[in-house]
Length: 185
Image (cartoon, rainbow, N blue to C red; front, side, top):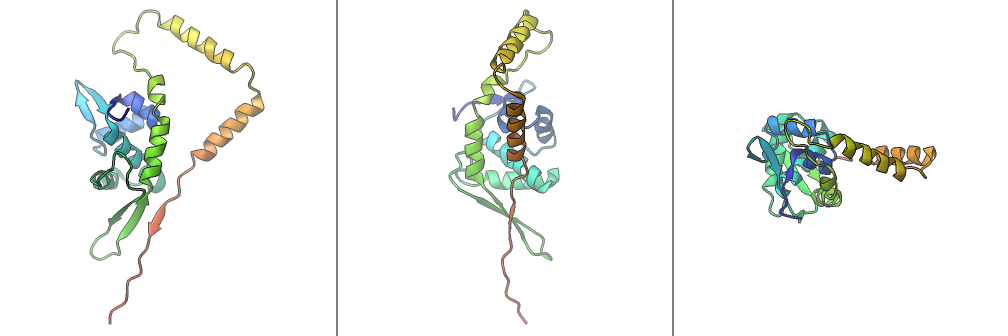
């Protein structure tokens, strides 16, 4: 599973973002997945880079310019794709200002990515052009199966599941490190 490449729609399902948001990251240059014949393929490193970009966007609301700089800097860390480092510290600033440090929980993000990897199989890509033969029957069968799976689920269970999902999706905590500097006279 480590060397598997996913298409954009599959990668968006694994990352938990809309395909359009992921496509915007690619088009603005924040992410640079492999491109073959107009299709983008995300390998493990590109997926982890995208996960870091989504994390920074959700946490900081950073512009694409900063997201590009941060993700490229983080991607250079040894063992980045495997999550060997527990946290990665990105530091930025100008000469006149104090540097800003951001801690990124890399190992946690990679673990979450590994946990969500089976979702790639459920997000099937449609072929380009016309719909394939039998797509209506396939959709009807899938809807019937989904309805059968939800027969024994109460409205309270649905509401409780939605609340727990939304609680889990809240913005992650961001740690900014401030280092003390001795004053010189």
